[in-house]
Length: 329
Image (cartoon, rainbow, N blue to C red; front, side, top):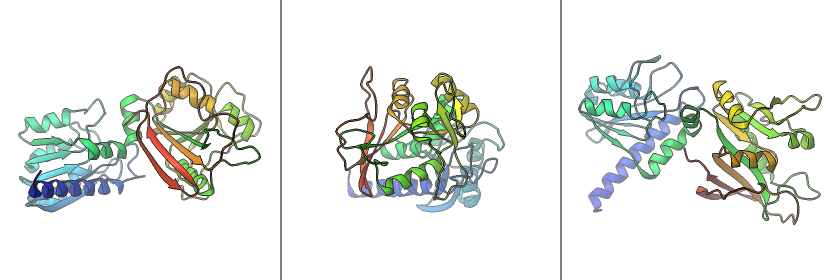
């Protein structure tokens, strides 16, 4: 790749990065829809920007096209998610793009919704628009941005993150200590709770810890649903919601009730059951600077090994946060 090609590639990356940034402006106000960002580029300049601000409101593509006006003709539209091709609360974005005379559309990720899934791209190409579907890291970031929604709409269940604090030798308890992880990690857990639709533990954790599972001392616009999976009964005074059915059926029901994301906490018994069923999508392990020497591990025995992808490690206070996917979005 020569200098001019590298320069063009860097410029495109910056433009798509901007589209991702725009999408984040809708975080928290678009439910049950995904966050989406878009921008129109004409003569190497950004002519219009937009994002999906709220459910029922204009989609990102429509906002960007309106912002660009006549400059949208023969321009390139960058959009983080495949444009829709059906009429819902708003009209099809594909028809608006065709009517505006856009020459090319760069798409970050295919829509997993069976009503769209590739059909938006096909409609644009049928209309004479050049369409490029991104690959590599930026495509992953576009999918990751809506990972919970993609699992909910595509698989009919919530996106499940298993959060656990463990010692360096993989134990989830430190003898003589209430906590495994440090203060910064524990605070981040409350931020995670504030960001998800539901938090869950097993009955062992319910009886041993009597957890509240709410988001405390952080900016929480709403509290998550707080669940206990198991046969029950719940202890007197518990405010958790008991879910007694098979995991797959319970997750399907939760999805039907609008739960897109589930944070799995607690001990290894429930986590192992989720893992064996292929129901853990993301793993967050706060590794603390301890050697417990004994005690339960973060997972029980598995019938088969599980491969992780996109493993990252970052300092988190006195701990190290390991993050990886079992099921990429």
